Amino acid sequence: MSETWYPVIDYERCTGCGVCINHCSHGVYGNDNSKPVVIFPVGCVHGCRGCQKRCSSGAISYAGDNGRQQSGGCCCTKPC
Ligand code: SF4
Ligand code: SF4
Image (cartoon, rainbow, N blue to C red; front, side, top):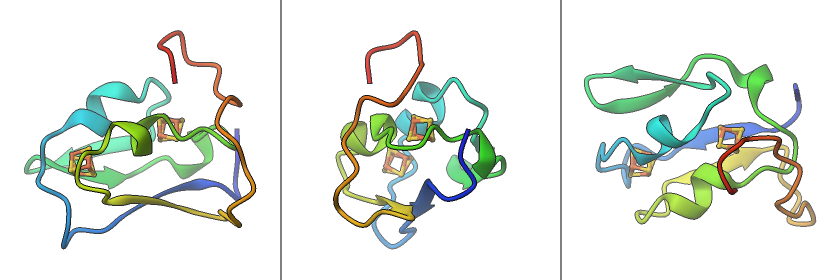
C-alpha cells in the first residue's frame, strides 16, 4: 500500500473506456459516469503501472513518480 504513489487522471485525454477501472483489483478507482475517479489512493501499490500500461490514451500518470520506479511492485493476480 502506498500513500506516496497513486494514479492521477488527465481528464482532457481520458475517453472513459473503463479499462483502468476494470483492471485494478485494489479498489483505487471508482466510476463517475464512466470516468475513473481515484477514491482509494492508499490502495495503490507503490511502483505498479498496471493501469497506466493499459491506458491507450496516455491519461494516467502517478503522484510521486520521479521516473525511476519500475513496474513489478504490484501483487495483483492479474499480470501488471
Ligand atoms: S484507461 Fe485511460 S482512457 Fe480509459 S478510462 Fe482509464 S484513464 Fe480513461
Ligand atoms: S497502478 Fe496498479 S494498483 Fe495502482 S491503481 Fe493502477 S492497477 Fe491499481
